[in-house]
Image (cartoon, rainbow, N blue to C red):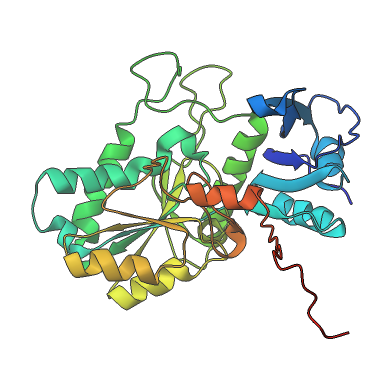
Length: 340
């Protein structure tokens, strides 16, 4: 089975014996092979050796995912590639965890605009965080859901804040957003913007290349207005692009938020303490930020629902994925059972 030559990372925990993996050509996908090397005196503990195997998915990735020497696989990347990884691993029954794509909703309820204060300012920034890291984040808040009665007031502030983003050289301290990772990614984003235009999406800001630096793969931070059924609202773009829709009621917001094949992240913004608790519980996503976004504390579990994968990282529960339970029943009775 061939794996796509797409961006991704495979983490593999080898079995106690050494796996035979041939060296792959340098490429886009990184594969991390974690190996516990036991010294002559095991009483002193173990040391860990990390090997980085670079190569294309159909070469290095496939070799890792189908190797007899692998006891556990962890993959971070696209849902399409993750599916292929899982199929390869299934042939050898290798336990696998996946952290895949997302199309995360960011919901803004009416109470956000009850006051023109620091919290409203924070919420506006929270909406614009779709441009963080040029939108090349699996939990990018790429869908914005705004309650109908505050749409005009709130979006005026969001568009203005988006247009104030300084794009340029990432080595310049004044720069807020840099370039996309490659020309291929830039072309992919531009293609989705073209698709959105054909679907009838309205460009509120951005929507084109940014020639701020000659030769750079820059995209203007883009906000599209449309409907949740549009392709640009359903497929992961992986760039500084978000789509905004309106909703009337809390139930409608939850329905729109869950109308996606993904379930990695989500955001809820409200001053209502009841909504802070009930709405996140109703959203089908592994992590839901409430009155914040893009916070990644080391002690908090991180993982997805639906086609965003399974298994959790950045929490002690992650250790369970890399350990095996063994039950030993030892009899201290010298006498037989007496059955035979």
